[in-house]
Length: 166
Image 1 (cartoon, helix red, strand yellow):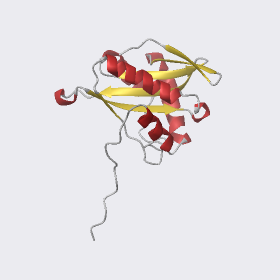
Image 2 (cartoon, one colour):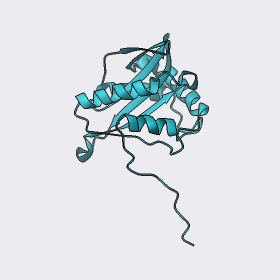
Image 3 (cartoon, helix red, strand yellow):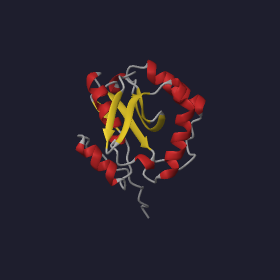
């Protein structure tokens, strides 16, 4: 699905949040790889689950066409510095639900880019009959957890390692 672009000015940084378009594919491939290598707050290490430009091209195409998918990018001076994605569940019993993910370059932390990507996604979900947004976050990522709680998300479970029964 496509949303109208939004302009933000936070702490002197002007940026736009808009829907991803197919020409963003190569930039998104490189951006995701860089973000994965900049932080230990994500579930992937750099290079894991790599998506090349053609993979992103297909994801963007799918997310543009499907009514319960949304792919957003944050852009500063025509450079993509962050992204978020909502992927709908297409089983009838879960059609009210989407899974959310977000990533922002470390140099652009502190400008509410992740927060605004999430808020735009929540607004989209609310206006499109989506009743539940889920995401996974590492329990050591306190900043993200606090943001999610502030925006109304609740912890529904903590994944733990299996204990050795012996």
